[in-house]
Each structure stands twice: as C-alpha cells, then as structure tokens.
Length: 388
Image 1 (cartoon, rainbow, N blue to C red):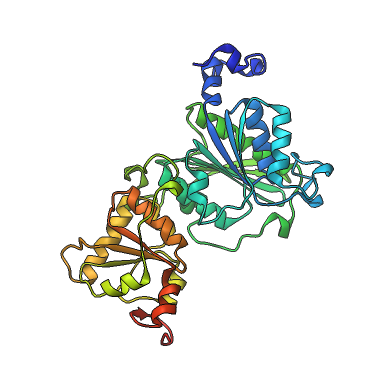
Image 2 (cartoon, rainbow, N blue to C red):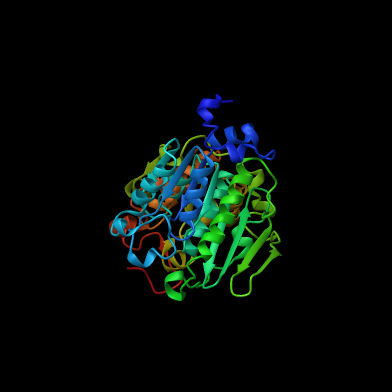
C-alpha cells in the first residue's frame, strides 16, 4: 500500500472515513485506470467525480470541440473554452481540481480502427457517448478484453444506466438490433439530467473499482425527471447473444498483455494470394458487415464480422469449422487469409486471431478492393450483378 502522504489522506478524509471504503479502498482507487468515452453531458460529471474521488488515472476520449449549445449541461466547460478541444478543456478543468491524478488524453472519436488500442489497459470503461454505433464497439471490445463497462443514456427528461460486466448480460442482450435511436441533438435534453445519470455512472464505477457487488449488473436503472419515478428492469442474458452459450466470453482465451495495436501483423499481398488461391487448405475469412459481404466477396469465403470475431476463441473456432464443412475437408491446417474492404478491419481481426492462438493468420494488404484493382472479378462472387 502507498504511504499516507502518497494517498493524500487529508484530501480524501471524508471519503476514507466511510468503513465501506477506508484507506485500503482509497489505495485501490489510486491504483485504478478508468476510460471515459465521450465528454458531453454524461462525461462531464463522470470525469469530475472520478477525479475528485482519487481514481489514479483517467483516460479522456472525445474528438469534438466545445460549442455554446454544450454549456447548459456539460459542466466541465466555460465560455472561455468555446472552440477548444473538449479533451484539452476537460483536462484543464480536472487538473485544476486534482493535480495529483494522471490523465491520458485522446482527442479523437472512437472507431473500429482504434477501439482496441484505446480500451486496452483500463480497468473500467464508461460509455458517455451519444452514439449507438460507439456503444456496440465498446460492448464488443470490452467483452473481448474482459473489461466491465458502465453504460448511460439520455432522452429528453429520461435517463438510464447499467453495468455490463463479465459473466452478466451484455449491451446486445438489452438491444440486440442496430436501431435508429435519436440523439440529444435531435430531441433535446433537460440540462440537469446528465448530472443525475452521470453521478449514477460514477458511483457504479467506484463500486467496481472497490470490488463491491454492483446492483446494476443485469439491471437497467431508469430515471424520469418529469414524474420523479426511478425504477429498474431486469436484463436477461440472451441465449443466442454473442456473450452467451458457445460464444461465452468468460471461457475465452485471455488476450495477450498490452494493447493489441502494438502486436505485429503478418500480411500477404494480393499477388501472393493469387498464387495460393487454389490451395485446398486455404481459408478466406471475411470480417466485413453482411451487406458488404453480399455485394462482393471471395468465392467460398467464410463470413464473420469483426464485431463477432472479437468475442471469444469459440466464435473463431466455429468459423473455421464452418469453413472445413463447406470445403468437405476434415481439417484445414493451411493459412487463414483475413480480408475486409481496405485491410484496416482485417488487420485488427488478425491481431485478435493471433491473441487467441491462431498462428497462421494473415492480413490481405489493401483488402478486397486491392484484389479487384489487380485482378478484376477473378475469384470473386456476389449476390447481385456480375462483378467486372
């Protein structure tokens, strides 16, 4: 345990007096790392209160700039911050409150290309975004990395909060289909609502860091500020979800330590693949979304989107077994060539395969578009018109 001086006990005196926390709990907070994705209405109270509570390292991720319309609810910012990077302005505000903590600043938006790099290494991820796509990315990556994430969302006068942790249901159990969900910009939001929901999220994070059972695992907490009704609903773990049954991430092979982004990736050029395309033990794995796969793909390719591939070794084994069945092969011991449109998503997929023990995986440089430029429609298939 760190010394009392290192723990800054005078600062946290009212907190360490609580028997549920104490000096040992404060030391645990100081040793923790939490990533806050999104520095809007929710991210502002979450980051503020986690910093004030003494969480040792905070990651701040947002690619946006401060606008005047933010100020009624995003309490980290002031008029002097207009036009500034949200991450930079938030960092200045947080350090003015607690200069002893560490900050990791990421002035960029979350994407499929950077999500593993950004999330790896943190103990808890807090979803403070206003994007359903980002929430699926956070969910699927946290499943792969075994990291709990604390979810929050806002709509007009209503908010919701939950904890999606290893062993419990995931966000896809709650919202399995990608739907069109209106954002705060589209529908509006009462300025005080993010403060309420954000404080609930920050509390849930502290419970996780202190090793306390979270009452929000498997539960969605709702807040209605028009009626002052606060209520919960259970979130059952869906048997056909990517977090359950054969895809149970709790049984997955742990990822190698350190960010996946730093792992070297073996690649294959389209010219080299052209030479090997007819080999019977070659597996072609397409990690794009279904609409892309249907439009243009390699003949006999196996389809498994990156979002599902990232869950567990079992999903990978299922995909490779399917490839064997389709080719009437007892076992394919040759190369697994992974491709997407341009080679970026497939690069991330190869890292996941390597981390889960698939040593013969290769990324197709330039993706299927590079193949199409070099060889036109040769070796390709489509559900639609002929490829030329």
